Amino acid sequence: NAGVMQNPRHLVRRRGQEARLRCSPMKGHSHVYWYRQLPEEGLKFMVYLQKENIIDESGMPKERFSAEFPKEGPSILRIQQVVRGDSAAYFCASSWDTEKLFFGSGTQLSVL
Amino acid sequence: KQEVTQIPAALSVPEGENLVLNCSFTDSAIYNLQWFRQDPGKGLTSLLLIQSSQREQTSGRLNASLDKSSGRSTLYIAASQPGDSATYLCAPWGGGGNKLTFGTGTQLKVEL
Image (cartoon, rainbow over all chains, first blue to last red; front, top):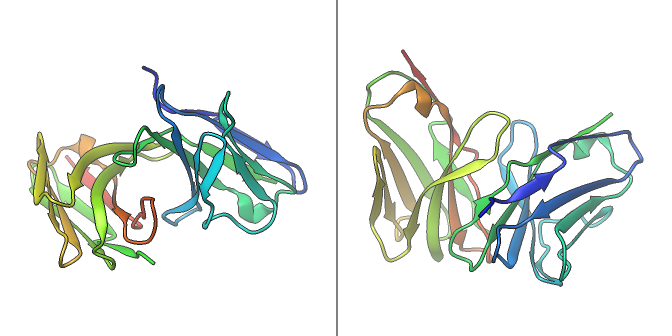
């Protein structure tokens, strides 16, 4: 049973471009969480999704950020018109209930 | 809103010492608490999960205690080794939504 898979591992974008981060949860897991870790800061919750539903997006910036977890395929975190302040490590976690989360290795986004 | 504080922020010790890492959280209405390890540039590895009804959990040289009513958890590391060098993160579940809230971590360095 493979762990939580995130790709790409590293993503470089220029200001104004779009960034798409993918997360494949562990087999059998229907809960997905996205966290962001800014340089020298702790992990901050962004969004919690179940299949086809956004359960809690209280940590998502109001503009430019969106997330989905379709019935088939990975969860996608999408950042439109990226700015330098979006540079961070983005982590995805999954669980089959709400007891224990398993984290992926993260995507390091660098905005030039 | 749950807030998590970890003390100390950084710790450097010689190999073989027994260590205590502290975590405090503001909202005691939690379901469980996890301790994670994060290595530079990598994802999170779950070390221990303590249910809200439990007082402690042990895994090898690691022991975590939980005092839910006072909002505190402690991670004990026995006979520290250089391979223990990493950032240790405390994350209660609940007390502000169905999600983990992370502290900023304790950066541990164990020297030969």
